[in-house]
Image (cartoon, rainbow, N blue to C red; front, side):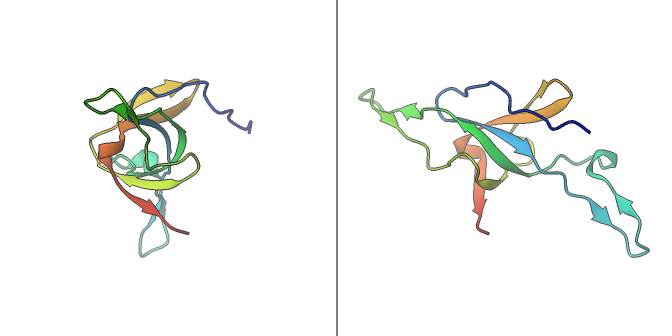
Length: 103
């Protein structure tokens, strides 16, 4: 198994690039259902890159509150999916992020 390299993608404005976290489910009988077998998209991920922020009405940048490396929870149907090599990433707006997971 080869280690995946981080994509060379820089989000624009208030967008973030997210590496989705698969959520395997285990049934009562011990069968593990991988995320790829479920129809639902992941709603958690690790922030890989952030944009510079959106501009206010005066043209000044408003920096994002989200930082690279944070685990986040986001809206189910909001992200745009992109593929880099064989790996899928999500790009979404900061407004679509619901929470940061504190470890």
